[in-house]
Length: 371
Image 1 (tube, rainbow, N blue to C red):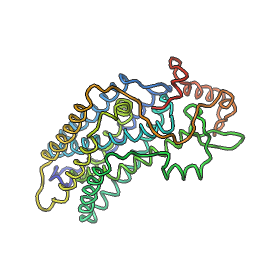
Image 2: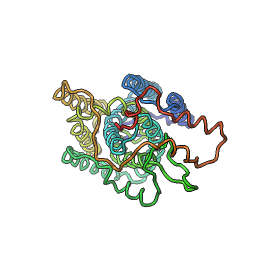
Image 3: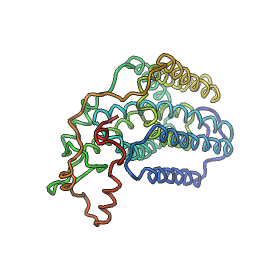
Image 4: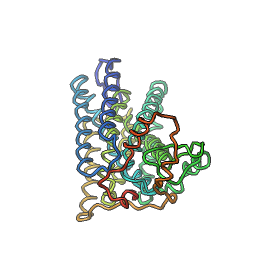
């Protein structure tokens, strides 16, 4: 690997087969996750905890592989990037919870939205990382621009820590409604339906678009933050990928605990300021990756510990948000009238209907509620 902002990680470049192996592993993990959640059902805390452990162990295992293949410096840079991305991703979780509550998305359909959202995030972040690496390779001074941006963003995050997003006022939502015809009813897990010969979107597609747009916004912060610890594209991409692969499970685990992470945003802001300062001082003093990793871990640990301490005794509670519209579940008559966008065989249509059917053991009234 070439020299990075964290120091020389070794003289051995990342072979092409390593990229293919990582991409194959990511596709395999996504396929396993999709198969495990092929039927629409409410994901409980126990299931979310189990999957969270699986994803975290996957990220740690890959870090150990990097450590063994390219040395301690590369391993530490990967873990520093992974920890930064994982920490900043918690903000994504909170925003998703507000979006789902605002659109009253039934819990059994949320995983499908997040699966496609994470898939899109991997693609967009791959593009951003490639662009960032190209800029750094050709214009080394861009690192100082990243540093200034991270410091300003961190300070701004502290100043606006008590503000919340309002999906119902989103410019993205207004543009979506202006150009895309949309029904007010959820038709199972479908994003598009054909009604009276016209293809229209369901509210689930609007939610997916908002999830993708918010991730792009968050990527603007997180990717420069990882470039502060390493400019090796392989490490930046894999740290991002393994961190966001577990976001769906993290959401179902933490969505009802947002109120307990009172000081986390301050901690995340401090992390951005720290990595921004580290990047700005690149030509003055090279802060060891070990120290950088320890500082990031300490900031997040203190923020989480203080938050849980002051909110001790508070249980799980659903997120409340201003409604983005009067959304509802489609009636049986509407479901029968809604045709598929692409014509399919009867067997395929029956299989799709069975997969989209809500869990039988969940009360009908509860299925209409959002997070």
